Image 1 (cartoon, one colour):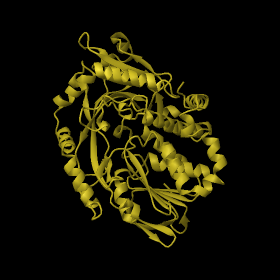
Image 2: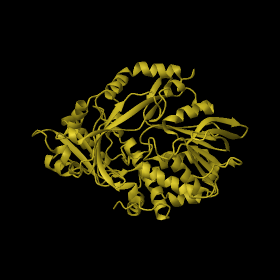
Image 3: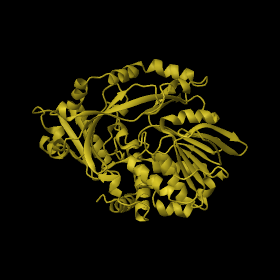
Image 4: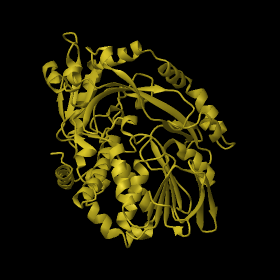
Length: 495
């Protein structure tokens, strides 16, 4: 770790050393090799919170299997918009990763990305009809043309043995399968990005640095940090600040005092998995199989049975099981929610709490759930599962956004959102999934918004070289999509 230089004005300071900050830092360094930048992280290494491999499902979210991206509403047509857009965003991420590999910045891409088929699984006549309609419509779009569908029990057993075996004869079920899905260790990817940055000139990465305050002074931001081990305080000045600190981003956004951050609250949700490391079981399942969410609950709690490849070893995860906490980070404070309450957001917090009592009760119930109940949920996906093969794995924290919508109503917003100051000198990422998978796309959009002159001028040629196609083209141009997709597959060893 380099000492952080504080005697000059930085071009950018990034708070948090997770996948999103590391991605933004790597992009900015590619576009402007002379940039002076600092990254501040409160933990003693990067990717210790939401980006850690065991704190997320590791799904390369491409809309291939996530049924919540194409919600099933009886009597209405299947809406494909989010699945198709997410697929294009993920392809943009793959373009950047393949660029880094092709140019020698990354070695051995299999350290962080591996091919794992993506599947969607449903039960019951109505759900089977929905899945078939989804399949038939998605196949017409780039990125989904290799999707396969089956409601044949033998075919389903060939694709996903653990899911099919042990079911009663005549049970209505169906599965879609895309062989070209991926499993990603976002922890390994983040560490590669950080190591790539630390090896370059004018990049300071400081660990164990807690940001105490962010204040605008004249035309620069002053970031006050304190080393949690030595107690040393630093004051760093920067023209641009990005807050990518996971669940803690809301508290830091509030410290900045920008008007755009007023009225926003946070609703923390913790997560749990069941994990299996028994090789006899693990080797029978090579897929990420997503199902429909439980009726009446947010789609973010849709169950899935996932192959994970972490540090070269395969395991299975099932979940997620939600939990209730008042922490904003896995190793945060129980007073985080209380610390986030302001006069401008207290009404929204109370309103959302009153109107989401069922969800809060669900979270509390999940937190106190017995192993027997957790296994009952697993048995709906894997009927022959044995309790002795599974153990509980604590996942990461997610902080969902509470805000007012365009009609002035207080809402609990699932997903991610980037908040920027009016002068575009400060930005913060709030929310949760699918942020890691589409981090390159999201950070590219942030760069275009906050650095418009450079994007249209000095950086334009480099951007076009790294990203031969962007989201709009990838959604409509089959030939271009296949060219970009096939190149990434080859470079990332996914063929």
